Every structure is written in structure tokens, then in C-alpha cells.
Length: 428
Image (cartoon, rainbow, N blue to C red; front, side):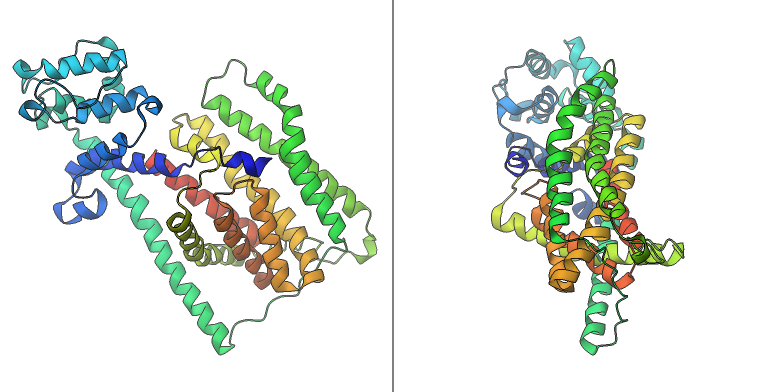
């Protein structure tokens, strides 16, 4: 049911692309000429207009309608009629202001509708676009502080991932070379909890999917509604996500606890069933960071090939859209806690701490890594993101085998989610 529902969830990719194009238009005045094509493109205004025109009229927000109206050709090119037949009353007021502003050239904003004036006051892009559309001069319409801020954020959002990608590719090629020369370090012993495949089906399918993702959310929904009563979005959404994820984790963790209590305690290894091996912290952090860098190229390549062959399949995690649109610091803190702390801890305990060693003991290490990664991807209930998630799961599984401990996997997973979260904040 969840996998089928993922087809109906929109992809966050179009929203991210539109956000980048809006930032590019704001950043353009602060970008040096030699870097302009790299950071903002040749004509960010035309690119943004094209992206907005691709949105069906009945699906456009009021803000997008205002933007497109303000980006229309001006003066003699516009004549007396705008190219797009919009319906929104506020937009018609903006159209009237655009068409009657010839006598106000160079005097800044002259708006007939108070609602539009308020929108422009709190939205730097609407402010800039409306100012130029109504005949404002560059020294009136452009905000150098905003332009510099947007240019810096665009540069960070594009250069940091590129540097990490190059470093990861270099590390990956070096590891492949060591494997080819048979000089890589030997993998650590893998301790499997003495549980059966049936136990894993109960844990993952029964606890994680059926109870955690289907049944318990129905029970917890009234509690979430009661706790968020009086709160407004996005804070109410962030609280709901946090409560929902905690509810998702309860059932499988209780099942795992019951399974572990039924084992012979005399068989428990000194390092524990999960092989956390918390010390030394520094080596765990280095292993997690190295694994994150090395898994980035194959994950991004898989996502790119999927987009090239099948197009955008949708089904993005709704949390991504929440981060991209939220401006509430407390809401962002709660979302970060869910994505960067709770999710890595819980998912690594289940998939790399328990499932992978059991599957590896039954199927062999290679098939154990692949099978656990496939279950990891399917459990996220997103068909559009399934192949990249499987590749990420393979990378996490290989790190579990090579390091012989669970902590680096948690750190690598947290780093992956944290960098994604930070990049969304840069584009927000």
C-alpha cells in the first residue's frame, strides 16, 4: 500500500530546481562575470520564466502567478496586454499596475492593491521583480546584501557537493585499485545474532512495515492532533513528523528486545550482539566520513541514470519539502532531530546491526549485503527513490563489514542525512 501511495507523492526535484532559479535571479548582480554562467546561468530571468510557464495554471500558487506577471516583457515589448490570461484578483491588480506604470518610470513601486504591496514587502524576489516591472531603476530595485547572501549560498550549495564528489570518486578508485592489487585490509569478523530468517521477517515486515508504518500511525494520529492543536504549520508538521517517527520505531524495537531476551545470555559476545564498539570515536568518525564520500558517486550516478531512463518518478520523502519551505527555527530543529539523529540510530540498529549479520550468516556476505540493502530501500516505501536507497544501503553494509562495528554506519547515515538537510537549508 505504501509503495503504491508513493507514486502519488510529488517529487521534491521540481521545487528544488525552481528554488535554485529564483535564488539565481536574486544573486545575479553579486556574481562576477567570469563565474556567472557557472552559478546563475546565462539568463536567470528567462530560465525562471520558462520554469514557471511549465507549471499548469490551476496548480500555480498566488506567489508564482505574481512572479510570472512581473517577469513578463515590459514597455513596448508588452504593449497593452500581458501574455498570460490569469484569474487571481491580486494578479489582475498587478497587471493593471504594470500596464499603467509608464508615467512612473524610475520612481520605484506604484501598486494599486495593498495585498500585493504586502507580498512584495516580505518577499525579496517579488520586491525586485515588481520593482523592475513597474519601471524602477537598478539602484532602487536591487538589494546588494540580499544579492551577496544568495550568491554565497548558491556557491556553497554547488561547490561543496562537487568537492565531496571528487574526493569520493578518488577514494573509490583508490579502494578499487587496492582490491585489484589485493592489498586492501582484511574485513573484521561479523557476529550474527542467533536469530532465524523468520525472526527477521517478523522484525522488519511485521514490526517495521505493518505495525510501524501502517497500524501505529493510525493510533498515534489522534495524539498528534491533540498535541499540535493550536500550533500552526510548519511547527505542527514538524511535531507530527517527530511523533510519527517515534511511533514507527516503537514496535520493531520492542520486538527486537523480546527476541534478544529469549537468547542464551552465555552466548552473548563481549562486544555485544550489535557490535557497537563505541571507542575509539575518532576512527569511527573517520570511517563514517570516508564511507559517506565513497558512496556519494554511485548513489548520485544511480539517481541520474534513473532520471535519464525513466524520468522523475515522484515519491520524494515529504520531510524534504518541509525543510525546503520551513522558516521556523524550532520546526527545523525538530526535523533535524528526526532526520539526523533518530533515523540513523533506529535504521542502523535494525538493518546493519541485526538484519545484515543474520542474512550474511545464511546467504553469505555478498548476498547478505545486497538483500539487507534491498529491504532497507523497500522499507522506505518510495518507488522513485528505491534504486538510490539500495545503493546507499549497499555502501552502509560494506562499511559494516569492513569496520566490524556499527557506530561508523550510524555516523555515515547521520552525515548523509545531515548534509542533505544542510543543502536544503542553503536553498530554502
